[in-house]
Amino acid sequence: MPTCGEMLVKLLENYAVDTVFGIPGVHTIELYRGLPETNIRHVTPRHEQGAGFMADGYARVTGKPGVCLIITGPGMTNIATAMAQALADSIPMLVISSVNDTHQLSLGEGRLHELPNQQQTIAGVSIWSHTLLRANELPQILARAFTVFSSERPGPVHIEIPLDIITSNADHLDLAPYPLAGPPAPDPASINAAARILRQASRPLIAIGGGAKNATKALIALAEQMNAPVVNTVNAKGVIPYSHPLAVGGSGSQDAIRDEFSNADVVLAVGTEFSETDYDFFYHGALKVGGKLIRVDIDPRQLTRNIRPDLPINSDAALALSALTVALNQSEAPHDGRGITRAKALRSALTSNQDANYQAVFATIREALPEVIIAGDSTQATYYAWLNYETEQPRRYFHSASGYGTLGYAIPAAIGASLGNTDVPVIGLIGDGAAQFTLGELACAAEIKTGVIFLLWNNNGYGEIKRFMENGDITPIGVDIHTPDFMTIGKAMGCNVACPNDLESLKQALINARNTATPTLIELCQERFTEGPPNL
Image 1 (cartoon, one colour):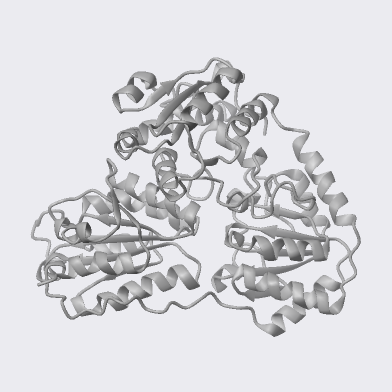
Image 2 (cartoon, rainbow, N blue to C red):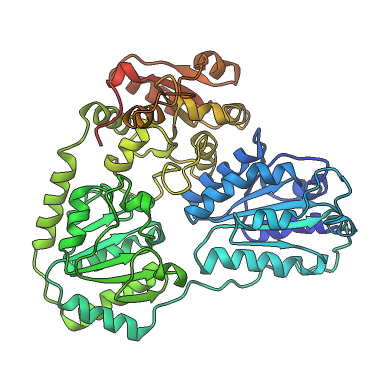
């Protein structure tokens, strides 16, 4: 008799899921019964938070949902932080958990792993959380989850299945995946209205966020048609290649870009929240748009947040940009080459303040590993990359420092990214303090034989927080923490290790790491490469 748990993994396979992350437990073993009969790879992290971060990293480089199988109670509270990070950054993630028997729910009788209301606990860190109460509803509920990923602003979806439902008879289920809806297209009247505004613009500006990650071709076509500079958030790095003459790079929090928002007569904002961490990281006050603002977003609620638009367009980014290009071509919008001149001037203003020491470190990384993917944590080197590291393709740089801002992200996220894209090297960039949140996942990397590179920036404590305390005339407390011997730990976890003294030895360590299937931990002692935090 095939059970609901067995049918679940077959359905996941039919939705093209090839990897799941999870730690088997007494309440989830029946979810594993059918796994050997599929082609799905199972990866065992050392903590459920690690499972969530791995799924996050996998999703960021593939665009596919990262999938987790998580045990009741503590497993779900452990993964909640990773789900919140994914929710903040609109990362598709499917978390499937067990929960106690249906007749035991919410009784508070002290059952193993019991929460008063697990579904309610997790609802706040998910787009949608559902309790499956009948096995025959499983295909429909999974279809709803994958429809979220295919047609709206993505994020974590949680499905919990009671133990008695997991083991119930499911031989009658139809395992064919549902046809999935695509994302919304723009209203033609809104596109025509936007074209009229853009046609009259003499100083247009395009601002893109993570919602434009799949819109490279359409974005470039429209930017060239408008001859408009393109600024981007962290999650939109590489959507327009940095080598393109209209690409500005940098961050919306930098003064030169904020000034450009004030001076532009029309801003076309696509898939960006206008969040504090993207546009006011230095706490200079709310971003000001001097001219008209056209906002495009797949989430209609987002169109009313942070900055009021003159024209809101609820649409998928690529569909809206393509429609606008057609509309402007038909109207023969007059634009000259001043956009490239403006983009060049903005780049010059941004690069003039780059910290030479950090710049040299990242130049070395790029020279050794030209096609690298970097998953960053909250650490001083990441703060430099946030403003100054640029890419030629989307999905090649991301971090947890903005938005939700969790620590310990980069090690497991880099592992997930390496499984999602095996053709290019992957670096997890993390500080010594944040690394101690998730050091155990080094063992997972060794176990699955991934050649991921962990670049550990060591400033012997929580250096950035210490700086904030000192700048605020607060006696530093709790920031000068014990620094373990990372080289010994790395070896014990099954990693190759290196502690370069200069840029040349860093380059060689990166090249050596690229040519092995074993993970490598490279410790960079800050005092050997720079005198302090980056000049931001």
